[in-house]
Each structure stands twice: as C-alpha cells, then as structure tokens.
Image 1 (cartoon, rainbow, N blue to C red):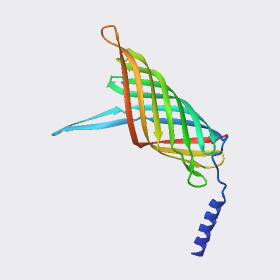
Image 2: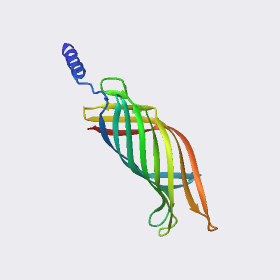
Image 3: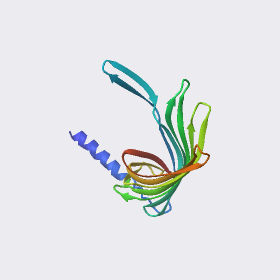
Length: 219
C-alpha cells in the first residue's frame, strides 16, 4: 500500500512539474486535415417466405486541407484554411460499375477561436468561421456520357464544443464535436427546351454526432 501511494505521488508530482503552454500572442501553427468516408452496405428484403439481399456502395467523401493560424493577442487565434473536397453519390448500377453524381469543391475557410484555459495544457476553444466553395457537379448519365455544371456556395458555422490539448511545446491535438451551420449553394442546369434553370439551395443544420480531429504543429 505504501509503495502504491508513493508511485501515485511521484506520477502526480511529475505531471505538476511539466511546463504549461500558454497560447501567447505571436504564436503560429500549421495543420493538415484528411478525412475520408467510403464503404458498402448490404440490405436484405423479406416478403413472406421470399428474401433478397443486395449490396451497394455508400456515399464516398474525401477532404484534404491545410490550415495556417496566428495568435493576434493572448488566447485569440485567427486562421485560414484551404482545401479540396470530393463527394460521390451512387445512383445506378451497370454491369461494369456504379454510375455516380460527383461533386468536387475547392474551399477557403477563414475562422476565429478563443482559447479558455482549463488546465496547464487543456483549452476550451470554441470556433466560428465561414467557408467559400467553388467547384463542379458531374452527373454520370451512362458509362460514356455525363453532364457537368459549375457550382458555388458559402456557409457560416460554429463549433460549440471544441478542445485543444498541447502535447508538447510544438504539437497540439484539437477536437470538435457538434456544430451549427447555415449555407447556400447555387448551380445552373440546361433544360429540355434549350434554356437553363438556375437552382439555389439554402440549408441550416445542427450536427451533434459528428467530430473533427486535427493535429497542429506550432512554429
């Protein structure tokens, strides 16, 4: 028992002796982002004694980005990110592969965050930001025929529950769970009479089951 108490005391003393890392004015960092989601799903339909099982791919999404941040005053961070995203939605199966609707977007994302210290290394860091996107939507009509239209969009967002943990003076791990966003997207498509139709979609969204994890390297 005495040995266990001594080990516990040594561990606590070591943790308390580690240097704290303040988010001080002038600090800078770079961060990389990669996120992917793809797979297949299997569905079984039953009608009395008859059953049928089918497999189909799920939506495929990929996001690759780079972010640069700068603390303009103590605990207040301004940053901007750039990236590219891909979304593929399966729409019809052929004897060779699935046809998909494909969206490719190039994104610029300025944001601001205020760091509230919880411990020497752990910070509560809620974030608000905006996203501006420009890209294209490609509809595959057949294996050899597709239709591509340009698309633009913007959104504003807020991460209510976000934390950052300074693993070392140079490395930090950030995590955000849940968000609110409001955005608008627009694109134009040709109609069957030789004209065009302009579409605009507005969307407000609460997400409580999503999470973002980012590694930051302080310069």
